[in-house]
Image (cartoon, rainbow, N blue to C red; front, side, top):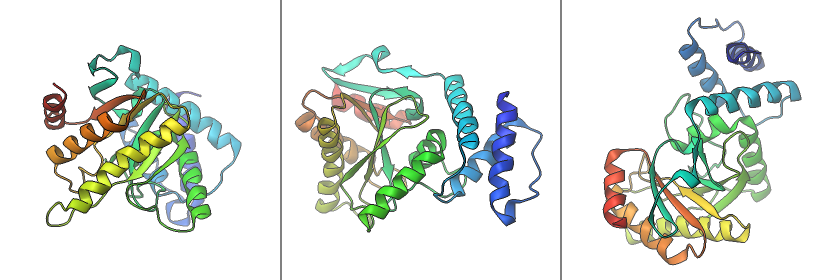
Length: 253
C-alpha cells in the first residue's frame, strides 16, 4: 500500500464504526485526509480492533514520523552535563522516554485535531495507546491524581516509553500547592524512569498550556527539580516556542 492507500483504508474503517460517520465523503486533498484521519482517531473510544487495521495503522504512522524527520538524542548538545535543551516535535524524538502532559482521565484528548501535546502523542502513537491507558485507569478505578506518573509503551513513536503525568490547573493565581504539585510531576516521572531502568527522559513544558501555569515559574520549578532528582538519567527539556526556549536557555546558562 502507498501512504494514501493506507490513509484511505484507515479513514474508511474508522468511519464505518460509528453510524454518524458512515458514508463520510473522502477528501481528495492529502492534507484534508490527514486532518480527517486524525479527527477520527481522536474521538474513537478505547476499544479493540482487528490485526489488519493495526498493521496498516502502524505502517502508516511510522512512515509519517520518518517523513517528519527523527531527532536522535545523540545528535543533541548538552546545555549542562546530562541536561539538554531542544526545540522541536517531541513525537519525533528518539530517546528512552518522553513525558505526556495528560488530563486526569489519562486516555488522551478527545478534541478532534487539538494541538495539545496529549492529542499529538496519542495521534502518532496509535490507538493502542488509548487502549493501554484505559486498562490502567480501569484497574485503578479512579481519576489520576495530580503530580503522579504512569508508564506505558510508546507504540509507533520513536521513543520506547511514555511517562504520563497530570499537572496542576492554575486558577486566578499560582499557589504554593500548585508549585508543589508541578515539582511532584517532574519528580514522579524521574523516579518511575529510574525504577524501570530508563536512562533518558524528554520533558514537555507541563501545565503551561491550557492549564495556565506561567511559563517562567514552571521552567524554574522544572529545572530545579530535575537538578535535584535526576541522578544518572539524561534529561531533555523539550520546548515548542521560542519564548520557552529563551526561558530555559537563561536558566541553564
